[in-house]
Length: 184
Figure 1 (cartoon, one colour):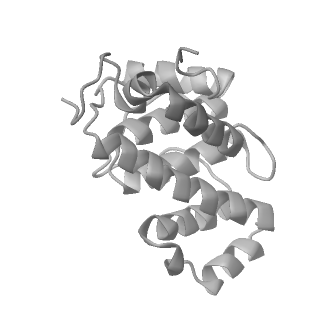
Figure 2 (spheres, rainbow, N blue to C red):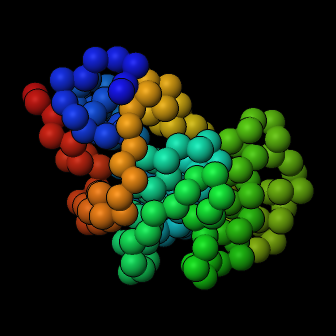
């Protein structure tokens, strides 16, 4: 049961967005800008960064939602992960530069100050551009906020892969701006 009263039975951030549409518009706008582009990083890779940071934050709802959005973009079958033991990259062939960027994202999850010059140079040597590094850090920082919002208010996370498969496919195909029915 959520720490706040919700007048809906939707899981995770969806329930919060339906309850507080004035913040939902802004949050969905941020997600749209960060995740729904193929500039430098593909949309699949962007979603994978979001899923990775969410898993590191032990946020079941966000990690599974964004993992399945990534899998949908990659054309891979849906899956459910246990955030305490599974990796979002299991079974995926990802570019070496993505491994370096996921490392940076993991450090941002702890503290932005943990990112070192060596981390950035490693990513650059594997082909990362300034835009890719910028977007990785911003996605990681944003998902720390999203994860804390979801878990800090005690929302529930379904345990059925089909719930996440459906949500991930919808986000991959339709994006974030209309992902939650928001009353005007």
